[in-house]
Structures are given as structure tokens and as C-alpha cells.
Image 1 (tube, rainbow, N blue to C red):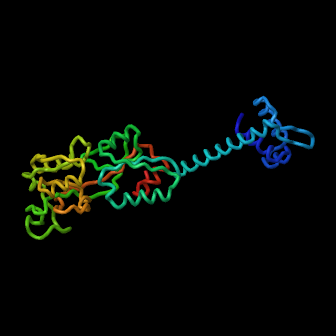
Image 2: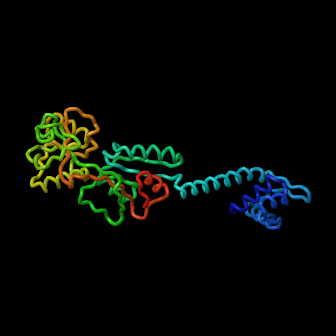
Image 3: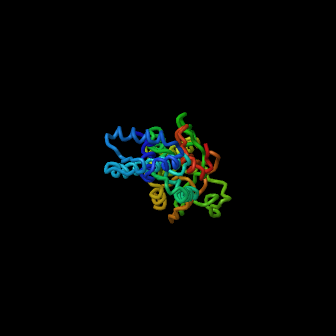
Length: 307
């Protein structure tokens, strides 16, 4: 039994005429009759009562007609789904991101526009550290990752990356700290601030993400400190940036975070840009090499990534 035979049977059953069904199917009548007979032989029961001028459904044919229509309907639905997936209009996409990414204007806007424009697609969002994302991509657990790696990061050959967002690292200081203002006590820090040398923080306790969290930011900060000639003294570790900023406000120490976190609005802290090109921070979008599906391309187009 095949779907062609089902289509032929439904056409005859609805027209109750072999000649009319043949015309509707754009075939000659003999092969139509042959396929219906083969279907009946396979089922072991006649589906149609035939006479010279009359065609009617048998009781078995009446029951089989409903099943045949349902099977053909499911086939058509399956075909439509495949077409939508091939066109990037349907399918499942699993997107991971580091904590700072949703704070960037482009990310929530892209997610919203993608969902509005692709109602048949299923977009799953999951918060993961940079290290967890790389593992998830390798294992096929996620499709796309937005990660913030250390400056020395080089992706493995199995993963393709594109830079999509960029900001700078800033020193997060208690508002009353002597270094909280440009010039170390002069006018408040502004966008014209030349930047703070991270070496000026060498005596301060640092509040950072745990290294074992798989966060590229920890390696970035320690690299900057090492290049300035000191190892950061870890005063406390915390898993949330807002917790770190709150602890800085309490006077527990200082921190270094991406500039985007200055949007949190937590009182009692000041943000100074770090001097030097090494303080530039970047967000990369990553996916498995050669595994860019149509629906993934549609999502990444919001970030001007097409390959």
C-alpha cells in the first residue's frame, strides 16, 4: 500500500465514478482501476461495489475512506512542515547566553522580533556561562551561544564564531573611593575619562566571579592584572553581577565588569573605564561549524550574521 493508492481510492470514493476520478487525477482509467484492485487485494476486502453504471462504497470502504483521508491529511501536514523548516519558518532553535547579553539592546529586540515573525518556530533560551556554552555546542545540546570569552580565546575547529557585540571593561568602585572620579578626586568620571590604569587597584580586594564558573571574564581580569605586574587579591567571589555590585557598594572591595552593568542603577557605586586596548571586551555568537540550519540563519540575521 502506498499514498498514491490512497489518493486514487479517495478520488473514486468521493466521485463514485472511475471515469470522473480519472479526469480529476489527470490519468487514464485503466491504471486507476488497476491500483484500486491492488489495494483491495492487499487489504483482503472489496472497498467498492462496481457495476456498469454504478459505483458505491462497501461497508469496509466507508470505514477505510475516513482512515485514508486522515492519512493523506497527515502526509500533507508533514510536507508543509518540511517546507517551512526548509524555508526557515519553522523548527526548533536552542540559544544560550551569558548574563550580560540580555542587557544589550539588540538581543531582547531580536528575540521579540524573531518570535513575532516566526510563530511556527520554537525558540528556547537558556542562561549558561561561556564554558558551559562551549561544552553544550560540542555535545549538540544547544544550537547557538552568545558568549564573552577571555581575550586569548581561540575557538576549536568544530565551532564557528562571529563578533556581534562589543563594550569595555570598567572598574566598579565604591562611590566614596578616592579613584571613583577621573583624576583620582577631581571632576566626576565622564565619557571623556582617559581611563583608569588597572595597576592602581593592585592593593584593593577584588570581587569576582568564581573561576570554576567557566566565565571568560575571570580570565580577562586576571590577565589584565598580570600584565600590570600583580595578581589580584580575591576578597570574595559571587555568581551574580548584581551581587558583586552590591558588595562593592558596601565597601567590601572593587570589581571589574563589562560596562553594560553600569545600567543596573545600583546606588553607592561608580564606574571608571579601564585604560588600554586590552580592556576591550567582546561578545561572540558561536555555532557548530557547518551546522547552520535555515531557522538559525533567520535568527542570526538580526545580528548581521549570515554564515
